[in-house]
Length: 299
Image (cartoon, rainbow, N blue to C red):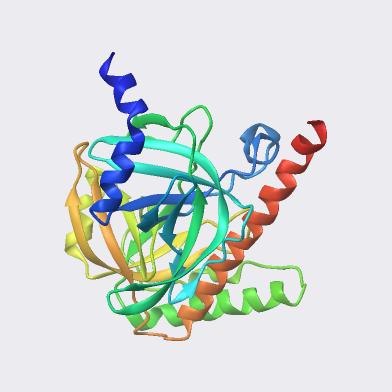
């Protein structure tokens, strides 16, 4: 049997080994469907947030994982929501699409109670390289991140206040008449802009992949201001200060940086960040359900 086919057929063995070692799965909301997520229609393709979730238990019917979390707030993942999952071992990634079965109850993690969710055990997977997130059944779009070295932490206050006021307008059902947070007078004191890819989102930070030519900038500065495009779920970007907690060089020369959110200049901004991400996830779940309705009727 060819090695490629053998590794694909034995994905369950890899999953069992990963669970025994206390490993994680990469999990994202599944794309809403071709009718809503293709660029051919002229609409903005929604970015997919990926969480790395620790495996707690396995059985023939389900996989129990820690619940996705952001800034000590559980990200709701109700039963019936379709998710894309990835088993990552070495240079290989096995992608699958399944559904959430709802809450798995509570468990203990490092001595504290933690919520869990259950995913239906997939019946088949598709293998690809670790750096790829596209197979025939799944095509994830990782968010692009604008990133700048932050030269003065206090200078972020005006743009954060502008974003907060814009969120209040939207919550009140008002239309955004301007994009004040983009005004030059409100911009923080920043160094030269470069770009990154949002690889995963965690409880208190993000994982970023930076191209080789920009990797040195991560070591030369302490803190960064990042903006993540949340369209079409939200017209507002997610803007937040981060500091690099750890980084390593990947095989292709790119740099992976684990970054922690930094709210030392404005503790209240943490509430806005959690609100924006949870709102974007909820809106994607609604769009996912609407995207599936025509297929169900056609069936």
